[in-house]
Structures are given as C-alpha cells and as structure tokens.
Amino acid sequence: MTHLHIPDGVLPGIWIFISFALCFVVLGLVINYVKKHKNSKKKIIHTAVISALMLLGMSIPLGLIPYHLNLTVLAGIVLGSGLGFIAAFIVNLFLALVGHGGLTVVGLNTLIIGFEVYLARTIFNSLSNIGLVKRVAFTTVFALLLVTVLMVGVVSTMNMPIEVAAHLECSHHTHETISVSTDHFTNNFISFLLVVLPIVSGGIILESIIISLIVRYITKVKPDLIDYSIRYPVK
Image (cartoon, rainbow, N blue to C red; front, side, top):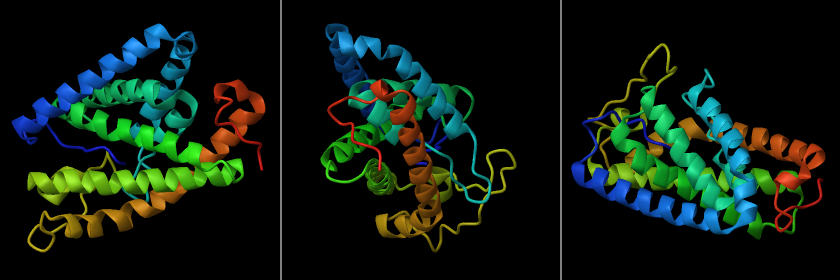
C-alpha cells in the first residue's frame, strides 16, 4: 500500500512534471542496460509474470484492513532493481487506466514503488548471514516501513488532505471511507504517520509472511529465478 491513490487534478503541476521526467530518465537508463546485457533480456518474461502478480495483488483489498499486497519485495528479489522498476511502471500505468489512482500520479507512484524495489534488493543482499525465510521477512518489513515513511513525507510536503492522499477505505468496491477528521489530523508528517502506520502495520506483517513463502517455494521448484549472487540455502 505504498503507492498513492490520488485522483487526477489533485497533484500539483510541478510534482507531475518532475516525477514523470525522473521516471522516464530512469526507464531510459534501465532499458538501455537491458539491451546491453543478455542475462537481463532473458528475464523479460519473468518481468511480465511478476508484473501480473503485482497487478493482481494491488487490485484486491484484504478486506478487514484497508491494505492490499504490493509484492514489490518479490520483484526486487526475482527481477532486480532495473527490471523491477519497469514492472513498477507497468503496474502503475495499468492501475491508473482502471481508476486505481490518477494517470497524473503514475510517475510519482513509479518512483516510490521503484525505490521500494531497489531498497528491497539492497536490504536482501545485505542480510546474507541469516536463513532465507527470515531474510525475506526482514527485507519486506524494513522496505515497506521505510517507503511508507517516504510516502508520508511526500504527501506532507503537498499540504494534501489525509483521506485524499491515503485513500483510507475499508474496501475499494464498497467505498466505505474511514472517518478521518482533517481538523485534528493536519497534513504534517507526524500526524499523517500516526494515522497510516497503525493501519498498514498488520498488512506489512501479512505481506512479509506471504512473500517469504513464495520465495521459499521458488527456491525449491525453480531456483534459477533468483540470482546466484543473492541465493541462500532454505532454512
């Protein structure tokens, strides 16, 4: 849930311009890298599969809490930072086309989720002295928490109502919005963080468990999907 559900017409124009400019610069660098490296080319189909999984996860709310799976950590582990960024762009574009956030926020959301992919890969690489399941779980929790704080910081600079930015809903289908008073929860960093963290903490823990099980399964049936440089014996 670390991407912003902001409708079109809300995000300031300067944010739209800068976010899309940075997004396309990174995409250009990644695509150029993929063209030059055969190993990356072989993972194009993996990128499509992971993108589909991410799209599915982000489209289905968990029900009891206003949270949906991101699976960005899985993208970071399986695809790496570059192809993971491409997957983030594809997913955000598709979600925007079906009304899950505005088209003008695709650039910003891609940067946020792309950074989450990069962070997940980096953290996972650094935790080489523990078992795989714990390694993935810690990576998921740390990456999602850090990027949630980043998301809160971004929104805080926009002076945007909390319920608009976070889209705090019980269900994307019923649209039963949680009552959040902007009089009491002003758009500063601390107040927004106090609203978001208690809501997403349960979802983050659940996502860490799910991704750990997925990666454990992958290492047993298709270990070549994970780079040898970051693979670790299943424990």
